Length: 368
Image (cartoon, rainbow, N blue to C red):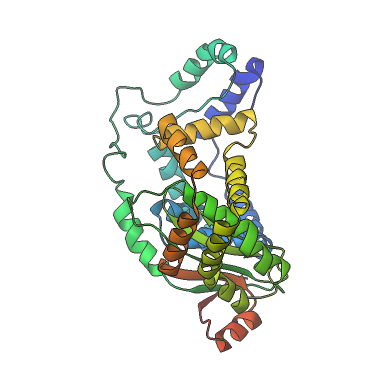
């Protein structure tokens, strides 16, 4: 939430009301919210299929990605449908689940253990609202002397083992059928092993791939509204994505040609270093983009959560600036040897049938 310092108590009161006194026993309201959520998500699958595909890809390789899928992807949509049907047929069981969630969050002995409060403001404002902040915390259950949670920097979360078992069920090439005249084509996989160091140069190569080869072949020549890739410098996961794409199997072929394109680009950079310089400048521009105050606060909070230090960021920046053509070749080799590659696509039944004839077969699920 956002508020001026004079209105901060009103904001905290809203937070407290939502946490402790929300009326969960309104069956009609809950069903209305579930129907709205279902409708909104089905619309998102049709209009923003690239985001749905990206979520599904990440869910196959990272526990965090799988949690995101459960709370915002295809898996979430399926869960919403099931809860809606249950609410209409057996409302008391849904109400019991909602009340259990709240009681678990507000349990007296553990409420403060997993709580984090992130506030972004000027120093003077932070000083001025300190009493308001303490008052807000004091009215919540629990205190700082309650049970302590595990140190998740040192120990894996109890959910991890179960999540990995569930992730295996979606580790396959999948197609999601909706009424549409375009496709959202995704392919992804791991370029680095778990725990392996990922240099800053990798972000330069991924950006070059996104703004060059994929733009030219998926958007300009392929006719899609967008063609790009998403690379995580933390996990080493690379995902290819297209947006409102008239092609399906041809786009997958473009993705498969990315490694050769990077090899050719590395040769060109040896002859014309300006190409590499332009790529590095673009990557540095991404690192130094302008941020709004709330974005600055969010970035600082995320860095704190993952224990990212200023020294690490400086080292990463140095690796970006020192990117060499050999880094492009290394990235290309990793693409050729991508670990556990998989495909996720949102498209029409006809497009999937055509892709299957071309040898691109997927397990299909009808969404709408």
